[in-house]
Image (cartoon, rainbow, N blue to C red; front, side, top):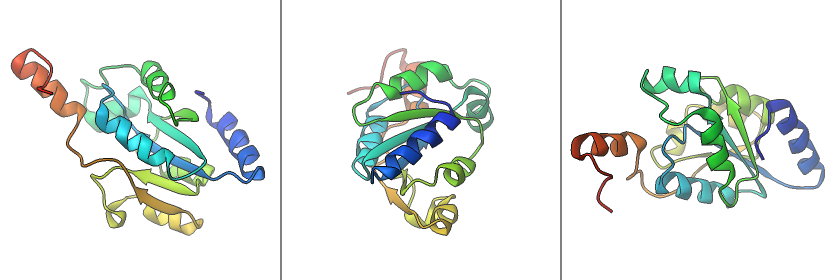
Length: 160
């Protein structure tokens, strides 16, 4: 379900009253690929409820450059929402997920394997409220940047 922050916070409070744990994963999710899928599957295993925060278009342009995103925020959110294991999707406009972590306070903050626990920028925020950080997904062998480059170089999709 794609929800605004206010709705997400109310739903999270309700889930907590029911004894559920909450995990948060975040990212751009432009040109959804198997690396994204494996990251979110790993994140879903960390708690009862998985919330996925998707960077909005303005934030993506600041983070990735003027030629991104390729797919707009609403469509990216809809694709992520359709994946098994994802309970809630919310768009966020900050350049880091820190403010959302402080508002939602998930039990687990999930990051991909391009990080180590020690290198997660928001790790101190999560530790401060008593949450934990988990590294999930498969090795970082897939990226939207590589797919775009392969298409530009060969005019086709990357080799399987």
